[in-house]
Length: 195
Ligand code: HEM
Image (cartoon, rainbow, N blue to C red; front, side):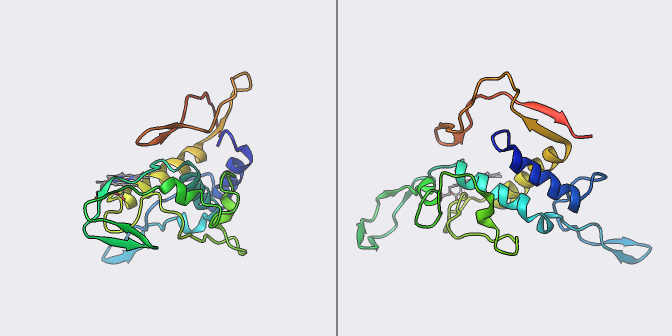
């Protein structure tokens, strides 16, 4: 967000207009509770009403690809995919980074553009080419927990604070450090209370 202050501002404007400043964005659709024998709804999730915020989170996951490669798996049987022969027992590693940066499915893949996840009516449109948690039978088991955490951390932090690059700090790179995970390099931030 310190690299894209105008995007940060749009997220905050969306949250301010949908959620307001008196409470934090809600994460889950809470079930009803019993009150004097009557079922009373407890507060619905705001997520569906925050399409731009959700699109920013999807675009961060796409462009960063925190897990650039899947976990190595072994091919269970002799297999042919798209004419490629993969013998039984081969170690197969999926390249999630390549999927996320494929110019055939993602226009200008190196450009940070959350709007690519919104349709003409500004509604969220998930894309098949976005697979940060991999795909198939061994897809990340923590996917739903992780999505919830990303949403809560991101919205709550931006609801409370604005993040900026300190004006006298060195320029920073978005290239990151690649290992098993793709992590950010060092950078300084200035945190400004919004209230
Ligand atoms: C943004 C956060 C996360 C990302 C991007 C992520 C991504 C991934 C990816 C790409 C895989 C490899 C899937 C494959 O083998 O094809 C994986 C596997 C796995 N993840 Fe995550 N993960 C995240 C958070 C979590 C969390 C919060 C948990 C646990 C609470 C978790 C637990 C696991 C486990 C247990 C596996 C191995 C699954 C298996 O081999 O059957 N992950 N994750």
